Structures are given as C-alpha cells and as structure tokens.
Length: 215
Image (cartoon, rainbow, N blue to C red; front, side, top):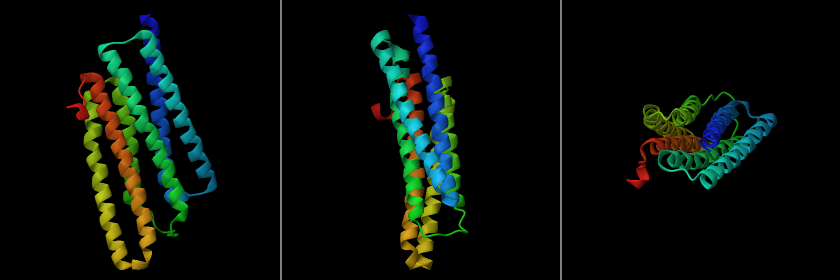
C-alpha cells in the first residue's frame, strides 16, 4: 500500500511541475501579447489555458484517490491538502493571463511602447511560479519564504506603473481609456504575484502545519 502511495505522490509532483510550467508559459505569452499580439498567439494562449484546466482536474483526481483509498495522516495529509489548494491558484493564474490577452486588442495602438515595467512584472511572476512549485516538490521552506518575499518586488513595479499612468493621464487626458486598460493589465500581473504567494503559503502549511489564515 505504501508503494502505491509513494507512486501516486511522485505522479502528483510531476503533474504539479507540468502545471507550473504551463503557468509560466502562459504568463510569458501574456507579456508577449503587449507587443506581439496576433491571432496565433491568442490560439496558443487558449491551448495552454486548456492544458492548465486539464492539469487541475488530473491533480484533483489524484488527490481524491489518495484521500479516499489511503486515508493519509499528518504530513502526508497536509501535502495532499496543500496541493488541492495550490492548483486553485494556479488555475486562476491561467485565467488572468487569458484576461490580459483579451484586453490587449482593445487598447489604443502604441507601436513604440515596450511596457518595460509591466513586462518585468511578468518575468518576476514567472520566477515566482517556478520557485513556488519547486518549493513544494522539495518541501523547501526557505525557497517558499523567498517566493513570499519576492511579492514585494512585483508590488513595487505595480506602484511604479500606477505613477507612470497618472503622469500619462496628466499629459494626455484623451488617453484615459488606454491608460485604464494598461492599469488593468498591470493589476492582473500583480494578482498573479498574489496567487504565487498563496501557493508558497500552502507549501509552508504542507511542511509545518501552519497557515497564515489559520493563525
């Protein structure tokens, strides 16, 4: 029975890594959409989004089988429970990346704009996703804490973007609609950072049994 449990936990980790990689890929596509939007990119985003949804269902199925058939206790139970919470945040990351791509074509065209700060936000959230999942697989508290602390970097970029947008509106009041779309995109990336932080917090729970909301 323990061999089956170990086998399924290995499969669970593999699926989480696969789902995390898909989240990283869809964030990158959302960032690319700011300067390279086209129908092919939209199709690829939808495809990766569907993969994330499928991974969520697969992981849920693995977790439910482990809970019902193995009746795990203590740390094993926490690991399974944490995984089920983590995939909810990962699925939302996929949804928000898709939302970003849907906003882009409605923005006023600014072909020379490179959106450096927003694209940097995207890069930072990609790193956070990868490290959060890695922290779970390795049960690495230090790496989980690093992810949570890194959310401050994403938040700082968001603050800078807001200031830039305020200045943009002051200089060109007619560009208000474009500025609001830009702010919404930055907000989605900021929320993605929050979801990565949530994932890291569930990693901490899986190791220690303590969760921020439960304290």
